Image (tube, rainbow, N blue to C red; front, top):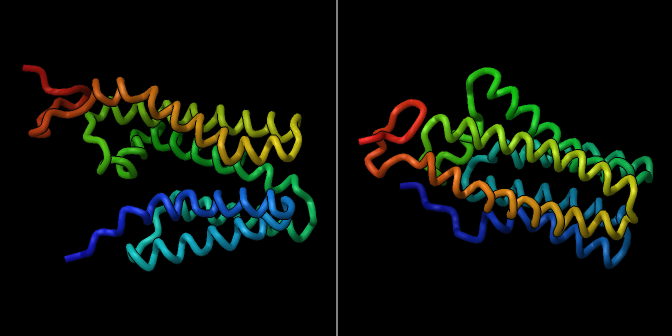
Length: 195
């Protein structure tokens, strides 16, 4: 029987690189913090694979973008690339989710289906809302890094994006509850079973 990963694994691999980036920035500068972020992201992938024998798609995509934009930042000594990274990641997630919906596949369902048991209409709505959220966050990151100081942008990247994501998730609870399937899993295609 496969051993379940420890409870600390997902938070550590999801937020550990971000914490390392934040600490490194305030101990040194953005270029050093970028190098630390690249190493921490790679380490998070290795730890995740060691425990689960697989790497989820979204962290893998994020790690690839961190690698490319981090390398460009360090090689060219230009902070612009690492500041654009959240824009690119959020933009890719938006396009992928909208593309999935266009093909009739709400791609959040295979990613989050273990967390929530919803009908298909609920998954379509949640996927569309996440896509819009990612689009807004991409635009917001562009506005922040282009108009504010690097200190402000780093704090926005670490705390602002996380805080806005939590608020967004909380705002979706009511919709998720409306589309939650009954315990026995019997529901129609577009809504919970009525009786």
